Length: 49
Image (cartoon, rainbow, N blue to C red; front, side, top):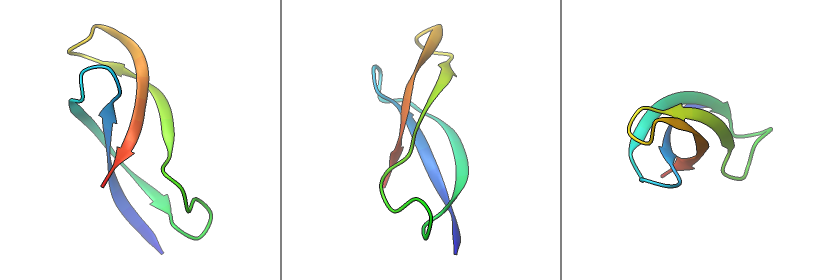
């Protein structure tokens, strides 16, 4: 049930992180506030497909 997803910065659209999610528990796209090295501060990162 767990799948690997890629996280992209909302501001600069750079794909910085990858994580796992359970599709049964999280059917929608997940969002986290993570550090973006390109922007230089914490930004919202969304799951990309």
